[in-house]
Length: 116
Image 1 (tube, one colour):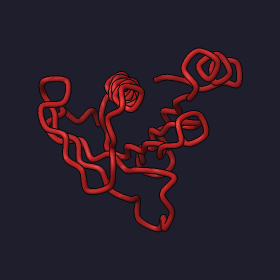
Image 2 (cartoon, rainbow, N blue to C red):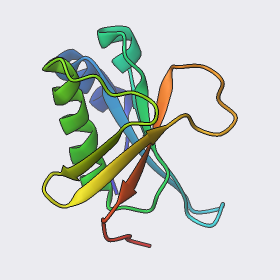
Image 3 (cartoon, rainbow, N blue to C red):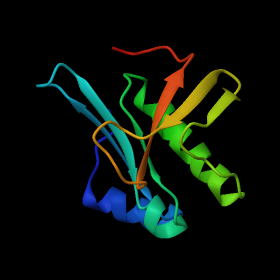
């Protein structure tokens, strides 16, 4: 699985203006926490969060494509549904539970094969 490090984070921040953490908690029944950092600061838009057990490489591709869409002027908001994303999946956007601000959007991935 992808391992985060300060060096990787700094490199990705310099190159893309955000970075990605792909985390799986082996103690907490494999709880998934894939998320971005810095989109709010570099683009003024919410960061993204995926908590479903999809392949980490797919999560990274999803995040990179979503940021590309933001960079091309596409607005991604709470309640939005994007069908036929990458030709195979549907994405639904919502606020994560226990989060009352607009700094992060949860991405619900439908149509992907779950890994775990």
